[in-house]
Image (cartoon, rainbow, N blue to C red; front, top):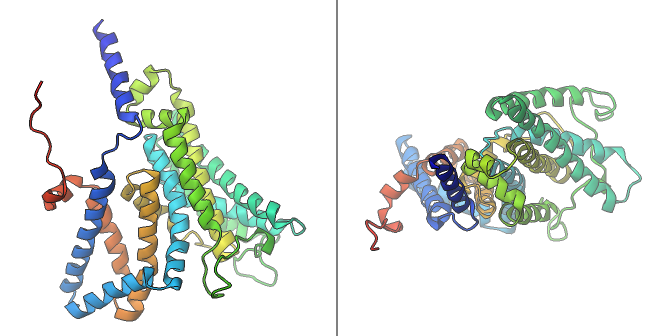
Amino acid sequence: MSDTTNQQGLVQELLQRAAPGRAEFEDLVIVPIFAVVVALIVGALIMLATAIDLETIGRSYLALLQGSVGSLNAISETLTSAIPLVLAGLGLALGFRAGLFNIGAEGQIVVGGIAAVIVGFSFPNLPWIIHMPMALIAGAVAGGLYASIAGYLRAATGAHEVITTIMLNLSSYLLLTYMLGLDWMQRPGRSDPVSKSVLPSAQLPRLLTDIDPNLRLHAGIFVMIAAVILVHWLLFKTKTGFEFRASGENPDAARYAGMRASMIIVFAMGTAGALAGLAGANQVLGVLERATPGFSSGIGFNAISVALLGRSHPIGVLFAGLLFGALEAGGRQMQVDAGVSIDLISIIQALIIVFIAAPLLVRAIFPWGFQKPETGRKE
């Protein structure tokens, strides 16, 4: 009887913890906000320690603000930078929810970008209404299949996804280098590793060119919004999403409840990889219009920070991606206007993650910002 009671208790705990709407508002919203504030303060102290005067610090943060939201061009750059971060961050957040620490988004972005650019230059007679979605789907499928390798190895052999995704990241770089050296993929008249350009019918159209031809914001923003809505629906409105969250909270209870752990692992990794592959497709179809070595620009690694800052919640990931996009866009302006190294932005991003990973420290620094726990309860 005791074993049965314990198992029933595990299932009840699983249902309570995995039910939608249980995430505390403080952990999802208040802790990240305070983490950003503390990171900016510590960033200023670091600048002081490196002999930067207060006036320059103030000017650098003002430039950071102006470069991220201070003009239409700044907003365009912030959103353009945020799109792949949000897409890849959604994939990582979904994996985290399922109890999988997928750090292979970088490789999935690379593979997704390769597939999208190949489709993008290979069908010259297709109308854009078919060609562009087909290129996006190719990127998502390639990223999903690539991530599924790690998922299958975890389900079939127990190989940890951290190790396998690191190896797959490295393999993707080698694959990109090899592909860019092939004659049928290399841009005509070029001996350096640059792919053929994506045809106009496959490109994500820019949205603000009528206002200013230099504004880079493209239709990928609609893909990003749709992905946020889709992942939110998947996680919190479907049986599959419940299984993801349940398996992530308590795998033993999930198995006792009849959930197929192996299928959950493979499907979660595949879905996460598809979102990362979509991020890669957005880069080559909307920004670069070709593939080059390093076109992923470390987006997959930054997306880990976005998923953590967003507390693995789709809405949180959206705002975290916008924040990191603003830091990236504003960091360039900060470097120009104040002469402060753009490396400071990387320091601030790292500090944000440090404080996000230590919520008790944030609560200790800002005790007035959190509700005090109840010390007792009347029966």
